Image (cartoon, rainbow, N blue to C red; front, side):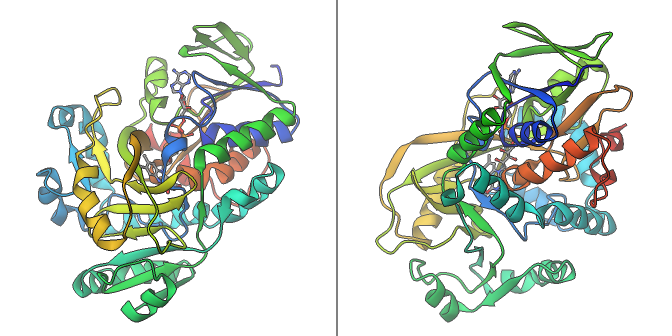
Length: 411
Ligand SMILES: Cc1cc2nc3c(=O)[nH]c(=O)nc-3n(C[C@H](O)[C@H](O)[C@H](O)COP(=O)(O)OP(=O)(O)OC[C@H]3O[C@@H](n4cnc5c(N)ncnc54)[C@H](O)[C@@H]3O)c2cc1C
């Protein structure tokens, strides 16, 4: 087997895998149909989201589900015609709402997320991109005292995992963040989190670092993956690309490439939108998450980026940014943002039923590796995933138990 490794997908996850394998002396080619970090890794909310250890499938979901499925709120928007195709995902998703499973999954998210800021800082320094990462935490905001009190269980989970946070009443919140209007009854300031002021630019810098380390980046659309005598062949519109090992890091597009190999990854695209706005007169110092309204807003280099909740729709469906229309009045209630800048953007979060990424070798397919399924946390978890994947590919031991993220959990 050659030491040549093919990484398919140059989103933040693929780029970081490529860097860490190159660092270990492997001959790595990174392939994408676009420039690096131009899909989901481009337009996210930019939060290195310490404290976001809560899996999507929560025990409370059953209570919320009827409302969510009515398409009236901003948290979830469903294309109803897509629901039948979501059944394999939803069946597993609902099984993950059991409390014991939820708590176990939260622990597995935390094990990775705990490293998010430090691993980014190391890479950002190497890539000359430290100015893009700012460590001032982020704010989880509650409009009603009732909702704040109802999140006490979450708070306990944060404590159980040693996540640093500060509870803020309205006065303390106003002092910390004078740019916020007084519409919140309480907040948690996740102090160890960080914010990236331009996630696309960070991805570009990391890709440049990979090139500077001697890595190769090719532009090609992958059509299929086949086993060869020596490893794996990616069939692409630029011809076949062979390597001893292949890593699939195609984000929400990973599933389609794996299905013909008989590996059925229960992965869906949780689509999400953003739009930029002119900054308010009093700037925010950190990103905010208005929990009840269902939006995240982050001060960024391109403007104030307002990001939406989840849309369950096919990957190739036309954009339907209705959630942006719903959250905008709520966002204006909270922050005096100005006029919109540019159009809305659509991205695809690669979501698994247990909210855990898939990192490891594909069962029954030697030398075929997976690094995908990072859902709402892929920006945060890119570097730590790259590190873990590279160690596993090289047979090195790791201080993080990889079994919760194993592709084998899906059979
Ligand atoms: C609105 C929104 C807000 C978010 N906010 C945050 C946040 O604040 N913090 C956080 O940590 N995460 C956040 N996320 C999640 C995060 O953006 C994703 O988890 C992450 O970008 C996934 O990275 P990836 O590399 O797996 O996928 P992607 O970035 O989607 O990369 C996949 C790559 O595969 C390529 N590709 C696909 N098919 C082919 C093919 N056939 N041939 C060649 N190339 C192909 C694509 O071009 C793309 O470059 C957010 C996501 C959204 C949508």
